[in-house]
Length: 124
Image (cartoon, rainbow, N blue to C red; front, side):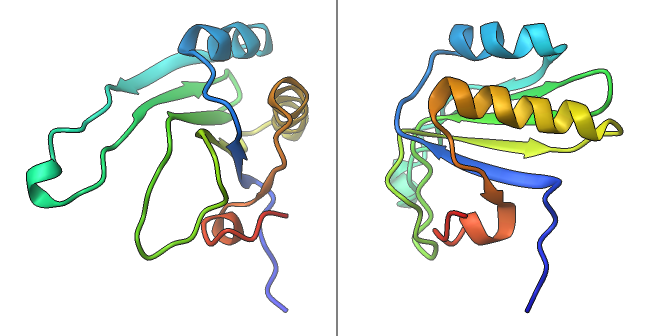
């Protein structure tokens, strides 16, 4: 039976919180925005699904939260029904990683699963 790293998690969200809401939750945990990419729906002529805006946050321990503000569609992968998606990557402080997961879960009723299994729709 394969083992999964619980340091790389993903969760599908039934709502699409605003970036202001996300930073309001993450800032008290020490996160700052380190990268943002606007939505890209200009690829329709290439028959590619629109790419929602994404936001990358990092804390002082290297813990990272990636927020995809919209539905991600990958033809070859089945994802649970969702309005947005979060990823959480551990840094040097396991407690910071755990607290981040708990706060995000409590705020948006997220169920975290290992990144590689959730990508295929098998939410843990």
